[in-house]
Image 1 (cartoon, helix red, strand yellow):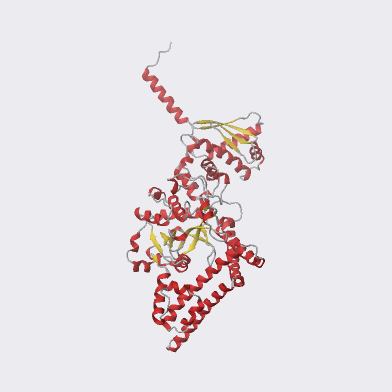
Image 2: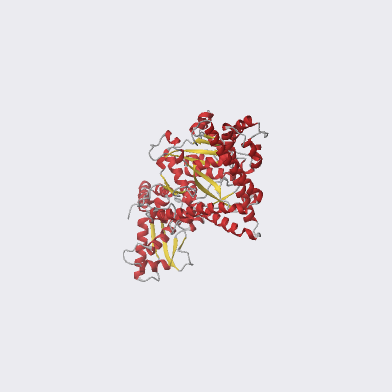
Length: 606
């Protein structure tokens, strides 16, 4: 008879068995061959072997047996996953068997993708997985935190453009499964979704082969005078500033506007502090509500009817828009970011630019909220900095309080203006110019605003009496007056011809304005211009086609705008048309007067 083992021996044997079991624990895929021909069973084995070979070690090591069954599934459904069983659509097996020898095309990819997709679900639901619950994955995927919901995430994923499969937006679990397919099967996934490629590579400790990426990060600058499509090299971006537009008297501007300024170095300048002098190369990232109707409606702004998109604009255009037209100052506060954080932030901005089609809300998802989410998602370190705010001024204060934004650059106002940390509103310049003219001519208006509010015809007699210095000051004011008249005329045309469709004489105007807005809509949504069914950041061939398409649309947009402006005056009310003509006549009068006075004083001909 065998002697009973001692308790110690039993314990040792148990340990050996446990260790052996742990070492051998792995995912086992067991095909159900019932009803399959020998050829079909062999093809199934080859498919599962190929899928297992591609899976990351973490999924391969999942201690579970999975039965694999072929079934006739509903249209558009390639598979279903249960705890210990996955179902695959029978049509995928037929296509897999029928593929030519050595083929790596649609049939091969569809069958492998479905298998990997369902195994990803099995892993994600396991205790070892739970990838879809990782806050960092949710940030990258597009289920963003909300400042007004105490950090909770919204149910809507706005990254709907340039998606490899719209089903990824159904839930975080589906996002993980869809993207794991592409991570393991697509060589260009690292180029199209670089942030997610790095996430999965780090999470699963594996780096699938990747293709060579097109250089730089593509951005579409629709209103550029040159080529709209530009590639931004993160290594050429010396710094990122929080660009804050101060408030003015308009109700919609009372809390300011949040933007990010990219300090881009000139091509021949090595990255360094002197790059701040290269203003013509600086770019601005600005979230705006794309408004394609007559005016911004408070109700539509509250209900999220306007698209919120990330625009890329030249700094000089932004400065002119705010300081000269809206008469608002701009503060540019450097953010304390490392170079790798700047690169990650720009990469996130590119993803937003090509994929994000958000909804604009005056309170819940405005420019400040969008800028906060870009910083939160693009730079993981800032996620715990307590930056959440629903107003631009609030975000500014939080950035300063967290010592992320450096407000000390504004301590010396004169130096801040000289170095481009502050762009003062032209209202101060206008007041200074008006003071010069008022002293010389004893003008009756109390300030520049009252002078600009007066009719151009009322101002003309004073212009004819101005000396050289007063004429130069008044010329600046008349140019400002003309800009105001043009903006008022544009708004009046939009209200009249897009708001009142009953006037028969407005048909040409309606068609022209609608066509112009259509082109603006295309150029504000870059993904709509990319041909083909690619996803993520456009790569080399897509960029070539996109460069041609965007240049054509931009040229047409500029031409339509010029044509519309040339024709617009005949549609304006007589009073507005006369005001525009009078403002232009005032500028011509002052220009001629300045040249004559300069010649009389013995100066060179201007």
